[in-house]
Length: 227
Image 1 (cartoon, helix red, strand yellow):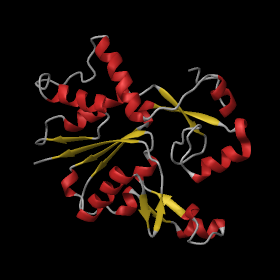
Image 2: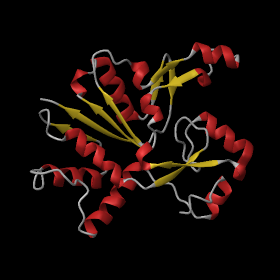
Image 3: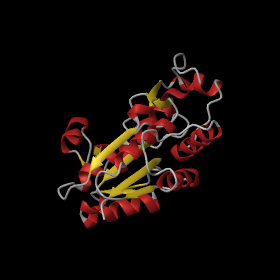
């Protein structure tokens, strides 16, 4: 894909771009690595016959991942090495907070922009290094940090009521759309936040202060936990 010259939705369509989920992306790139006899997890020693084959099977199966192990066992390092399995660049709707795919937008902003501008919708390119998010789970992490909250300042500036979804300030998880999102030390999260995460994993919807948004988020979750 000639990302240097493609700047609009129309040009992207002409180039034959087809959307794919992050799990499909990781899977197809891992298959290429395996065919070429290359290793993704360079510098990780002692796990060649145990953890790494299991991790590769999880990626090939399209699963979310939970690394369970003591401190210092390279859990986070292996998660970071998964960045190598992402495509170098992907197209996004320019200005979108949620890294919207131009052909499958999920945010209201991107949907309205495409409805207004059509094939002239501006497209930006996101590098794989910018598609990795990491959060250390501590007892003070809130739902607002991870999922989002209502922003009264935005509501006042845009003259919107609190019933309008445009007043929402998104947290880290929606902003990690089409990315790898790592939560370290998962058991340290409050139980109610773990329930909110479970809802995202199972149902694909997020709830913010009474708003129930069906955001079809495309995220590869990786969790680490210390038994």
